[in-house]
Length: 162
Image (cartoon, rainbow, N blue to C red; front, side, top):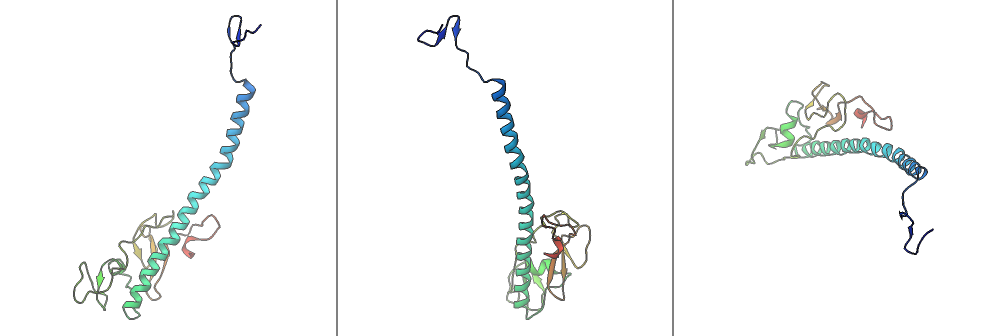
């Protein structure tokens, strides 16, 4: 018998979850996790791909601006980092400080890392040919710059074709 306070003879009602209710909750949490985890991992891959596109756009804009200000001459492969990150004169000679002749640039603060895995391993070096410690491959004659990676993104596009 139950009295008006909800007490049973011998104590209060015991309120707890049954085993079935606990199993149902665990199954629901498992289903939610199975849906959410793959979506989160795809988001991380997409972020790296977007970062690569952004870094390439930044580098290409800096190269194009250098090309425009230096009367149609692209930065040299041997000095591209200095020519993009320091002041330069019309001939491409660089200086860390602005002078009366070094009036162009800098076009970029620093060379961005290659954000995806691959041959460049996220390195900031720019070179005319692929190497293990090079992140970006630059062609001086055309001003083209690409990622030093033959791997593919989530859509199957090779990174060095971006």
